[in-house]
Amino acid sequence: EVRYNHAMEDIETQLSERGDFFVVSGHIPEQTMVARDPEPSLDEEHDASPEIETIVVGGLEIPANLDLTTFTLVFIGDHDTSSRQYVNIMLRLLTFPTGKPSDFWSYSPRTKQL
Image 1 (tube, one colour):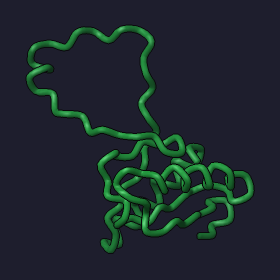
Image 2 (cartoon, rainbow, N blue to C red; image 1 turned 180 degrees about the horizontal axis):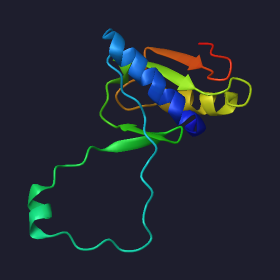
Image 3 (cartoon, one colour; image 1 turned 60 degrees about the vertical axis):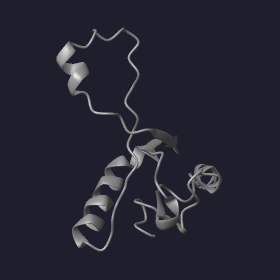
Image 4 (cartoon, rainbow, N blue to C red; image 1 turned 90 degrees about the vertical axis):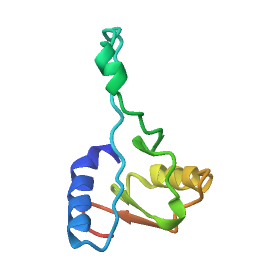
């Protein structure tokens, strides 16, 4: 759940510091601006690095080229209020072009249960 973004960052830090895990976390997509952006300068066009293609799953962006078969999905949200969102995310990832995650876990920051 997007409202638990702070908990996601805490868990990402804890898992990364252990060194046992390669952690990829979703990020809230940048908001699209209504006003037109200024034209980039020639230097900006020349130095621009290619953007990573992403997809949005459960309201968060993840890289589209991940081989999910080597990953465990950890859903962070309340079990009682998010079951539909969790199921929707699972169904979306079961049809992911590079394969489905090896495991699905759920963590509730409210109850601190995995």
